[in-house]
Length: 308
Length: 281
Image (cartoon, rainbow over all chains, first blue to last red; front, side, top):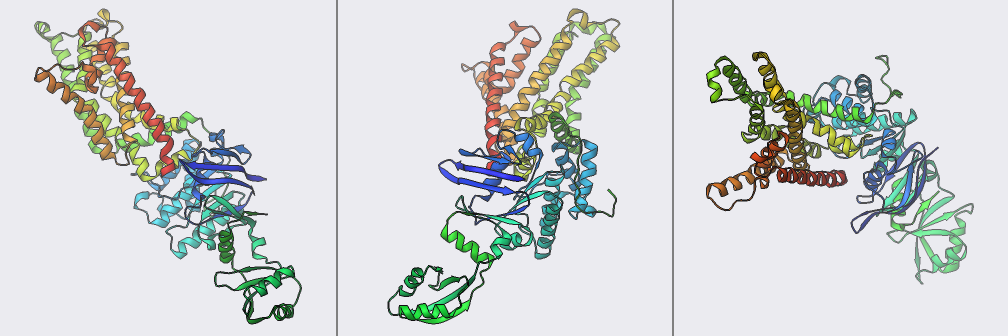
C-alpha cells in the first residue's frame, strides 16, 4: 500500500523555500526521516497534517489528498510534536482521554483507550499525576499516548527521543518498533542515525528542503562489490584517478584526499597494476566499510537526489 | 483488554460528530475553571447585585408605598443587565475565563496537539468560546431569569409580563448578544499573546481604557465622541434596541454597528492568528 505519494511538493515560508520540488513514494512501514537542522523535516510533517499549504505540487497520504480532506486525513493520522505538550491542571489520563475525545472517540471509549495507551507507553502507574510535573521522558511518553489514542493508521513522530537519556531513548524506540509491528505506519523524523538504524525499514534523507536519498535500510547496508580506501604518491597529480576512470572504475575522493575505489570482482592486484601504469605508488590500501553515517554525509555532500 | 496484556492494540470503534469534539474541549475547560476557588468566589460576588434586585422586588411587593421610588417594570431588567457591564462583573468574568483560553494553549503546546486531531480551527474556537460565553451568561442571563422567578413568586399575577410580554425574549437576546461580543473580543486578544497575563492586561486596557477616555472628556465638558467609541458604553447603549426604548439611548443603532464591526475585526484576527500559530510553534 502506498503510504505517501508526493509530486513536486514545494512549500514556502514567505520568500524562503522550505521544501523544494519534493517527489517521493513511500510504502507502509516504519520510515526514518533524516536530515540536518533546517532540512525541512518538520515542514514536511506539518504539510502532511494540513498545517501548511503547498505553494506548488501535491501529495497524498493514505490515498487522501492533503489539504482537501483535512478531517478525514487527520482522523487516520497521529502526530507527536517536537515541543512539550501539556494542558495545565490536567493529569496524563485526563490529557490523553481529552485527546481521544477530540480525535473522535466517545467519552467512555476515550477513557478506556487512554488507560490502554498509557499502560502501553509505560505510564500506567503515573497516569493520575499532572503532566506538567512529569520528567521529560514521561512527557514524551504522554505525547506518544496522545498521538495513538484515536487509533491512527499512520503516526508522524517529530524527534521522539529528543531530551531522553540512553535508557529512555531505547525504551521509546522499542515502543516505536512495537507500533510498527502492529500494522501502524510510522514516519520518524530525527537527526539521530542510530534511531533510524534501530527501528526503521527505509529512510528518506532531506537536506535544504530537497530529497537527497530514499532507500530501504537493508539496501543501504549492503554494499555492492568491495570498496578500498587508497592513498597514493604520484609524480603527476591526478594520473592515478585518470587511469581508474579510463578503466571504468567507480571511485570518489573523500575530504582527506583519499580515494575510495569500488571493485566488483577484480582482485586488489589490479589496483597495483593501474598504479604502476600511471606512475603512481600506493602508500595505503585497506578494505573500507562505510557506516550509515558516512553514507548519509556523503549523500548530503553530493546533494543529489537518489531514490530507489 | 486483560490487564496482563500491555502491548499495543488497535481500537476500532464508532466515531463522534465534530460538535461533540468541541463540546469535549469546552467541558474540560469549564471543569478546570470550576476547580479554581477564586473563580467561584468571583461568580458569587457577581451575584450580589442579583440579591439586591431580588430584595428590591420583594420589598416593593410587601410595601406598595415604595413603588413610587422603585418600580418593577421592564426597565429593571434592562438596568440590571447593563449594570452587570458597568459595574464590571461581565468584564471580570470574561477576563478570568477568556484571557488565558487560547494563550495558554499556545504557550503549553496544546494548540498544535488539538489541531493535529480531526477538528477544524472553527471547532477549536467553538470549544474555547463556549466556556467563556457560558460564564458570562451565568452572571447575566441566569440571574435575570432568576429575577423573573422571584417576581412571579411574590406577585399575585403575572405582573411585569402582562405589560411587557416580550421581556424574557429581550433579556435572552441581549444577554446572548453581549456575551458573544465580549467572548469573541477577549478570545481575539487571547490569541495574540502566549501569556494570559499580557492578554488580560490588553483586554482590560481596551475595555476600560476607552471608557476612561470617554468619561474624562465628559467630565471636562469637552466635545466628546458618542458612546459607541467605548466598548462598555456601546454594550450598555445597545440594550435600548433590545428592550424597545431606542429614544432613551445615545445612538443605540450605531452602538450595534460598532459592536458588530468589533466582532468582525476580532473574527478576522482569530482566523489569521489561528491559521498561522501552529506554523511557528
